[in-house]
Image 1 (cartoon, rainbow, N blue to C red):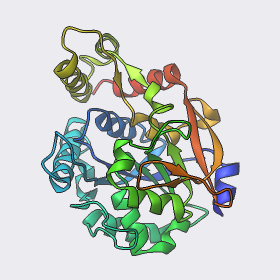
Image 2: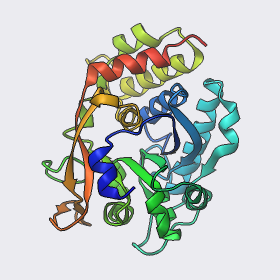
Image 3: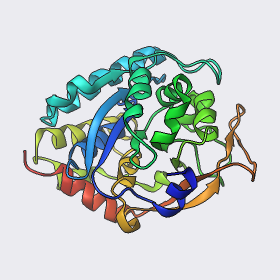
Image 4: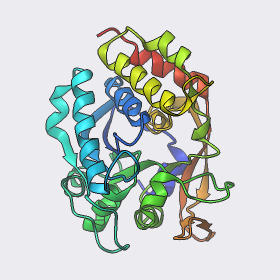
Length: 307
């Protein structure tokens, strides 16, 4: 299946599909929701591997430390979810971001994806959901460029084209990696942050009503979110974006029930945190709207199932 055929004719895969998830799980509180949502959709999503992505902010001392903390957080969530069987398929990612657009950042995750994708085909692709800096995926594509024919990449990164810049955390940390995935021709679904998934908000009363007391994983998600929010907004009204759930939701988006999208020519992320444009470039699919209530209804129903 060629890229244009996939993007124009098949907005969401039909039937049960194989998925790998690339996540900077310790960076915020939303990756945990995305991982849990994926685990609770086993009838549709066949989880094959989890990759720990690098990140560097106040919650880590370096990209490598962020990756290692994310690796540990993934294992913790698998235990809470009662899904310890997946632990053997968790891989450490890159210790650093790409230094240029031609040199891969070697890691267990990049090597696994470069090898794993060989078992798939354009007609039966492996779906890669990436919700952090896209270093691991770009590195795998550098290690083995031919695998782009066997993948569909769903990436939460960058801002909407109408936004003033691309200083979004996932994209800004590794612009070289973003340029690779936007430029190489891999079938790509982009979920922009500001202007699109920034609308996917929830609150403490809503979380407690739907999830508290349902199971150990749900309790962890609630308390982790509330603790984070009260760290900067205690005693004030707050809502919290649960960004990364939307990337998993793409794979469950039959009849566009959770997300709307359209085709665009693939933009060019620039190193000064802007988009450049070339109408001759291939198409990607860009999500432009989140159906917030429909998606939260399904998310809460899945996460709130009794253990």
